[in-house]
Length: 84
Image 1: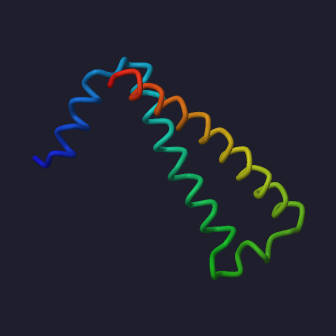
Image 2: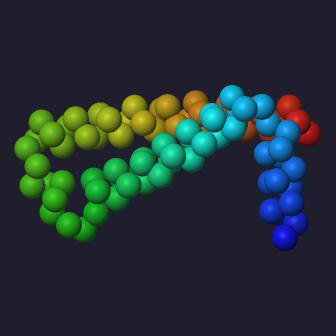
């Protein structure tokens, strides 16, 4: 086990259950944000072939997801900051 893996394990063992849920949610949301960004900015024409209303809604959704992710990541940082 690498040093980084041991540190991660040590930190995660000290998180409260709700903190682990916030961490898991932030990881899941980050994956969804990246997938939606890839869809919107991807080389395929799938996004540009959507109706303009659908394109606008997806961009709007992405902006909200980024904001929510930002809040979750700030919470996770605060969990770790309080531990060290």
